[in-house]
Image: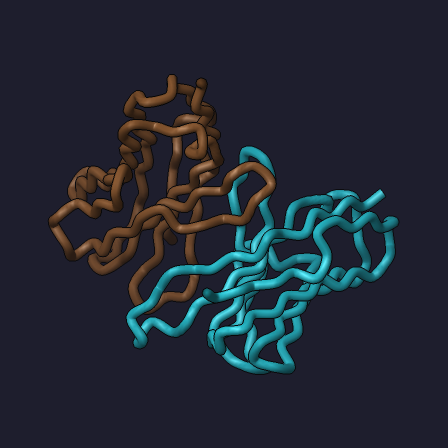
Length: 114
Length: 115
């Protein structure tokens, strides 16, 4: 079974700073996907960024990038130039290729301070 | 845009009541999911369905059942609600992996309180 661990329950940074959210996972599979989802206060969950495990290049989406360390089973999310709208719960998740089940971590509550 | 609509945003029920949570998606996705979200526990999968009338248990199916009579609709049923089922329930859908799109689209959530 896959497990996903987010060791930072809460974080806060000043607006415009860079912040990194940690995620580690455990899997015996070679082919899998990794995701970061964002849940703003009272709003629905949306995808931030995803990474296929077979790709060595780290995924990037505008201000959001990941540091994917496959050997260490680490998948951290970096948010550059943080904005007030980045305030949200962030969930790391993994899914084995060919399996429908997505396993989530416990989440990190990120607050961007004006 | 894909839309996943959950019929009730907030519900308050009494212990022992039967509760239906409805979820509808409008993009012909094969796969639909019900998750439960609790503080400190993240999201835990209750049930999922990969086709009409097909269902599979997730990690915490006890006390729940599901129904998928039509492709677009996936219902979560609490036969006899209990206080420990007070939670946020999230529905999600996605197309099959062979189509290359493997991202979940979530509904807004249904916050259930059982008194």
